[in-house]
Figure 1 (cartoon, one colour):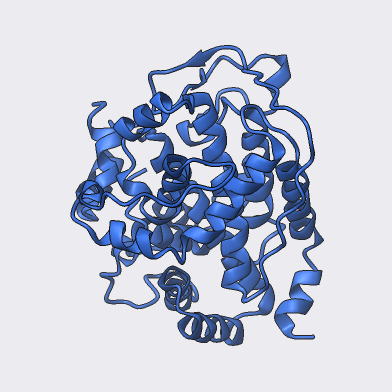
Figure 2 (cartoon, each protein chain N blue to C red; figure 1 turned 135 degrees about the vertical axis):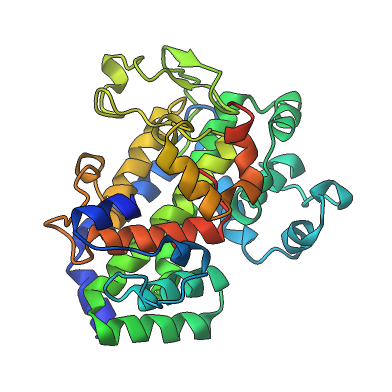
Length: 120
Length: 244
């Protein structure tokens, strides 16, 4: 989705940002570094880190964007748990683009890969 | 009033979706009555600070830690263990565990409903926590029996739980996904259709309505563009080690 939305916008995005390995802190996305820091702060469960990341994002953008960012993070905290708790496989494991991205990002090392790989 | 609180008042859709979920949570479900649903939500809320879960998460194999969570009046230790694992160590849930639950009397249909209750509550709590807002109080359960209703056209070949076949929507559940859509993550909870409705409602306010997901540029109702949303979503998923 990220790569396709970037292509549609005529931008180039560094997908390694998803695994924290991106050298360009913004990864080619406006406020990318702040959004990534916010995601990591949410996952850290450390309230001081979270407050700092949230304040930095709000200062660079707006309170409305912070609320949307919290919503997206909360949404995907749910989605990953639906996928893993129900053991669903990736819908299309045959696409070349998907395979390449999964290999590039090292996603096959995740435990939950077994739900998709075993069904191939 | 802080800028964040002011901005929250400008998103009444979020408050409505949250309130709707708690009204839903209090009512008897398909396989769990109201008090059990609220107890499942309370267990989900307690998981993030559970010391036993931290120990199990750190173990090379969860089986190394034989201790079970203490039972409650309404939920067995095995059920509480699973609720906590969905929050704290979801990547290591296996079909063998679902079989063990089944043998203890929790059917796969009931498990699908339980997953839905847990993940919707967790999503709401995570939203509040991300904004340092107080967590909403859990509702008083309503009396009544579980309906034990099951939708038609369930298939059992996709994941750990039965789900409505991609082209199996009947009139009673035709609102669950648009014709031709039916990605596995949408079908995953469809054995308990009201849970799909609840997560769709939450997704519509936290992320995007299902109907707008095809718009990969900029939603008219959002300030974040789609690249920004997907960057955040992807990082959260990667940190959760989610392959899907």
